[in-house]
Image 1 (cartoon, one colour):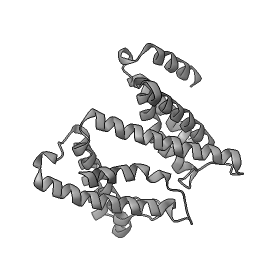
Image 2 (image 1 turned 90 degrees about the horizontal axis):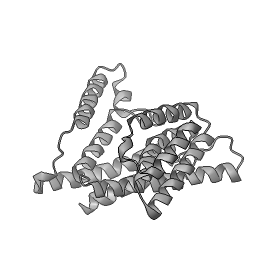
Image 3 (image 1 turned 135 degrees about the vertical axis):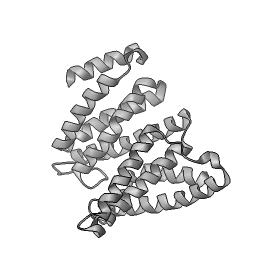
Image 4 (image 1 turned 120 degrees about the vertical axis):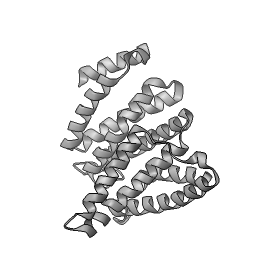
Length: 239
């Protein structure tokens, strides 16, 4: 379990690796991700052999992911370019092979990170990672002559898309937490918004707007503290 736990931590921290010699953008991180997944996948298989309670429990989301992967597999088999469909484009890191690693990662996470405390730890770590990446992007805009920031990810569109995956999770935990963690998460949201705006990515802008509308429409109002409601009102007015 320790191997799996530290492997998950390493994956979460991957975006912090800067683009050294153009290796990590975008091919290098995907290679490292696959290697880590294969190591923790083997460790997870050995764990399941010893302890059957570690087997993943199928949820509606898990069933949808399996269905998606099955359709993806069929599409690869029927593809006019099966080799490209399986391995994917090195510059885009897609393809069935990459998707298989992502699916395995999902089921490892849902199998071993079942408690709310473990999930809270992971999401807060992701939010802190996003804070550091976003801060790098803001400093990039301040002290360099780039017109569109890319942070440590090497591409403005990639940075905007990645922040979209994190920012609403960070904001939701910001509404619930107290004390230092709340302050850190609030700072993370601020710098994530700033970095996303500095990417000048129209897709990221549209995603932020649509995501914000969906987020606030589905937010359980009764569970929100009074001070958080004021923040939400101001944020909604700004939108």
